[in-house]
Figure 1: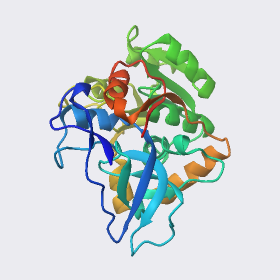
Figure 2 (figure 1 turned 60 degrees about the vertical axis):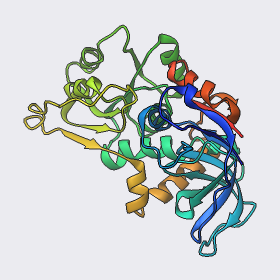
Figure 3 (figure 1 turned 180 degrees about the vertical axis):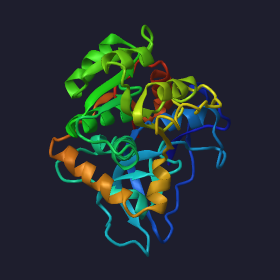
Length: 322
């Protein structure tokens, strides 16, 4: 099969478009003919400096396509089913073998490219807001990187739950577009101090729930923007800055909470996350939530697609099409 691979980590130019052996589906796996790959933030970070599980390495968490083969122990799927899948790696390829427990049948009425954009960003946003953030109607939410996949999902979900929604982004143009998805207040982090803005917009109170996918120094500032009994969920390091030692001395007196979150652990260790994502797929099919796709690139142009994402120009998902 064809795949976008690399032999060492680094910038987007490490990608090579090559023939590699087809993956083999085990008894509990599905072999999927990939039709759309949604590039996740973790994909770019892993390419930049993650662990190589094999060489050449095929990166990628999430993709969708058609089941080509079903393992002997798999129930509930059949060849020809349209599915969206997640995994540790392997999405940037024409074929993918994935455990059936990390796959969802795509509802009729939802396109395969749209479905490819759902489990990781929407599942992550939903859990950050509700399972770990305990969001209630009337509360205030701050979403960092609002124009990214998790950000766009979190804005819609929070607004639908009756929250007042703030988000950060790198341009006023992106913030304006986010208004169409439910954003109440946009903060351009290149021209404003988001902590000061959150305090100003809440009359000094702060945000009840903060979804922080940026990390680095931003995470410390997020703690400073929390309300009394506020909850901050750290979900990534999209800012690519090294982790910092956090000062949490003010959190105890304010009864605040800081949680880490990783969707993969919930899917592996919990029976709750898989049906939650299945429901999100249904909600998107019915039009209650929107998937936003920025651009599509051929799989052979994976380097250009990753470079575009890292330029911070993208709004929504960037897809690779094998």
